[in-house]
Amino acid sequence: MSVGRALRRSWSFGVGLALTLIFVAAALVSLVWTPHDVETLTIAKRLKDPGGAFWFGTDHFGRDIFSMIMVGAQTSIAVAIVAVGIGMGLGVPLGLWAALVSLVWTPHDVETLTIAKRLKDP
Image 1 (tube, rainbow, N blue to C red):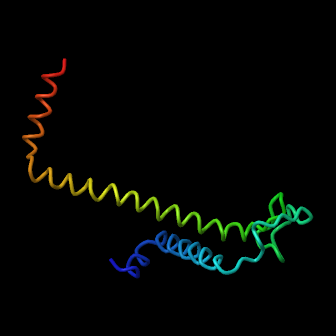
Image 2: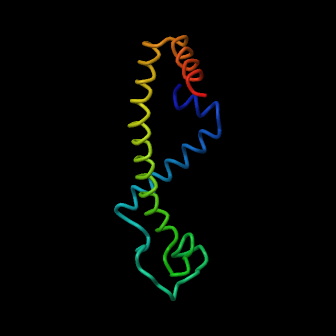
Image 3: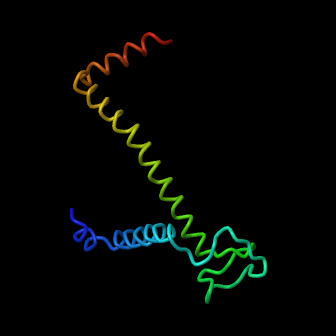
């Protein structure tokens, strides 16, 4: 199914795709630029409302929330990539093993082993 067809069939796919692209773009842009340094504490600018120089406002330490979201996107994407890698690293071999076992053992063999185990264990 093409992306265009998926967008026409499901508005939620379009919303999710747009949010994902924005998130990835923010992470990529934050590699070279952020509006403010995320490690600088500016107590005088703490708890500022959104707008002007601070698009999403500031936290209780005076750090720009928008800049922290941009930098945090990098960590979130890295964690997602590692999680998918672990899932594939475990899932693919287990799936291949299950496919091999289903070719070697018939459902009757598995049922026979299960019954034999139940008879053996009290």
